[in-house]
Image (cartoon, helix red, strand yellow):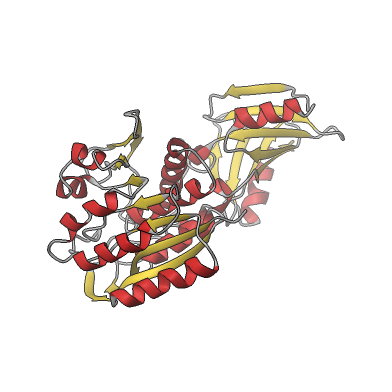
Length: 374
């Protein structure tokens, strides 16, 4: 199944945020992105130079054009810009089937600080909260919408994003409809390439919900996508640059992912020099010179290890569930899921020809462990 995600948002000419970030996110997660563009902006990494709102009837025409033909599995709402468009989007959404996931990112200002909304838009947004599955405001947007209690009274879940705070430790909080609260704490990634983080997160949540994932799992996976894209930001422009969406496809794509291989070495230094000469970049090495990991363009990794067996690594989104499924099908494991000191969770087995296979979960620790060399 290819999930169909309809994005109702503005266009960013710099490609960092808006529908450009949304399309890249949905595509990297294996979905099909469709758009109803609300505004065209002239902007770059330094700021927003001009905003041209599109007529409301044109936004509606885009909406019906894709919904009536292609269909939709989830909707992401971003920049709307003016109260009358908020009202019209509400009219469009009210006619859709109940239960369709709707992720509402109440965009009010760009990362540069430039305002994107006309007066009265924030007040009008409360109607959309009545229809949303989840709202994803940052701290300033949360205040503009009246605070946590007010939003929850509309009957949607709430993800409070802490990235706009000052602390080195970022805390995101998910509050679900039954009051269940989940907190994620992560160290801030040292980069100025933060343009489009909110758009990316919301579109990733929408795509994950379209796959049928529970809300907590959808948010957790979306957060991981954002962090990986921040790690891989290309460093473009002189201000708040775009993220590196294009490098995440082997970390969080649909299904199991073949993204790591370990080969044995009898000469550690020679092996490291050989793979470096082939164009691989070393990202991990050990003081006792027995293990090194290299990264290839596109995100695949290869390790050399003294005395190791050749091993194929297959990353799973939920390792324990995958192992349980395989055991039920009669597959025998040499090692059941185990947490390792290198921050992976692994299960090991042997294929019919005697080759070693490792099923694992690593997230950003495969390519960006705390001890990464660069």
